[in-house]
Image 1 (cartoon, rainbow, N blue to C red):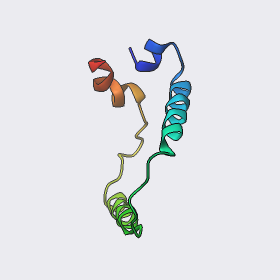
Image 2 (cartoon, rainbow, N blue to C red):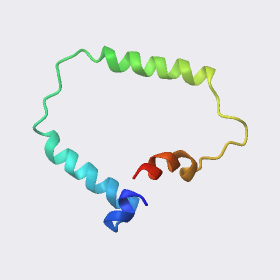
Image 3 (cartoon, one colour):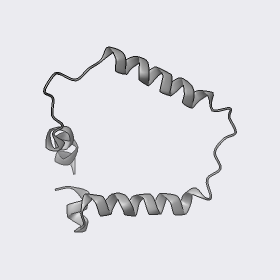
Image 4 (cartoon, helix red, strand yellow):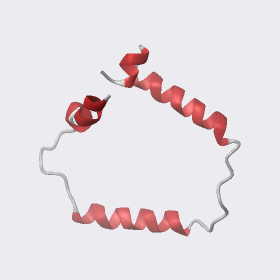
Length: 74
């Protein structure tokens, strides 16, 4: 059973609640001052990886397959 099911809400509502809670507290979090180069390096590296790794042809996202192990631990 998923957390959303345990709480009796949809996954969408759970995500909305989590974002609202995060944003409420985010105003108190001050990010470190940086020039943004870390993010730029991350994006560049992600683009490099995406050019080399492709999903198999015909691949279809399967939520149960993806979250199966996680949900089994709940």
